[in-house]
Image (cartoon, rainbow, N blue to C red; front, side, top):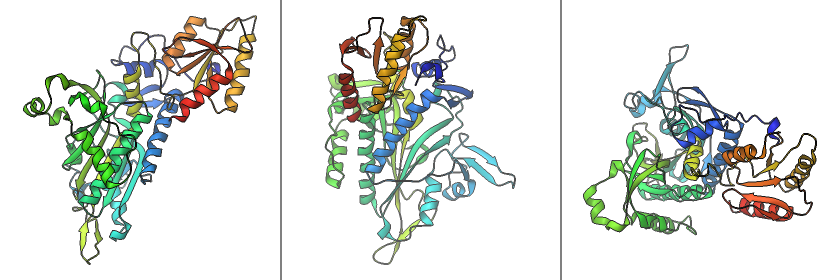
Length: 444
């Protein structure tokens, strides 16, 4: 793709209304544009990143046996009244009426709707467990939306729901998602720590937030530093392995501010291992038993001929929020460089030819290189503008594509100037560049 043909509306300076780095950068490099307070249009560059995150989330959900569905954004108020949450949810819920004067709402979450789907279709314990998920837009009418997509009103989210016959099986499902989330965030090159958290309006008595460390985070966290050394690699999808995995993490004190107890923290964590900092929530999982199935009469036939309400959990990942979270985690303030993980970068590599009005040889070489990259399924962004070299470099550093090819006046057919963001450039053959990028992509 050529920059001259791309819709990437880059701003010269950071917008004054943006207070944190992700908001500044996403507006400046043309990833998003504000439509109204807390609502954004996603432009090509931002959408490419978000769609790659979405696909990684989808793949990891599929691996644990979750099945994808798609529920509507607009829901009937009747099922929310049935569960008892319609009045309790508060002013964050956008309530509307259709032309028949029926009460509707823009879904902030989907526990009621998915329960209604399940109860109309599944009648026997033999069909359990069921893990269902969808990736859809949500709306919560935040009283004070801020920080761009990090705390907005309309957002893109993956939410999943588990249905099980009893508590033991339900906790097995819970642990499957626990592992799935660890693997998802690892593929995004994020260190996300599971922390005991408050259940909030979702309800239940078991919940974990997955937090990445960031000074701009809204969550205050208290943890034992040793939790960062826990290794989740090699965990299997059986009850014992998953239970052991969760125990490894829960051995170390790690909570968000809602669950913090100073006396307990100081008792369980020696001083040199204490960490009090801020973080960004990137995922949240809940187990709430029959909180929704009971009032909504969602039951199944048991082996002994009785009926019982299914046990449920819900599991959310903010797909659009992750775009901003990755920026907050990866942006280098000192060098003004944003380096996307290769797994979600909008392009795999940028090609920066020094173009002279009277000499197009560097641009021609860029085209030849791009042809070879395309043959190897490597996507590039070519800066074919007539800007000066320093402006091009600064622009590409902000866009954050992790690898660069620089083509200067001294054109060598065998060796090319190649650079990974944040590192020194080197002269290598194109075949070697292709190997490096393909190896990086295969890791994810």
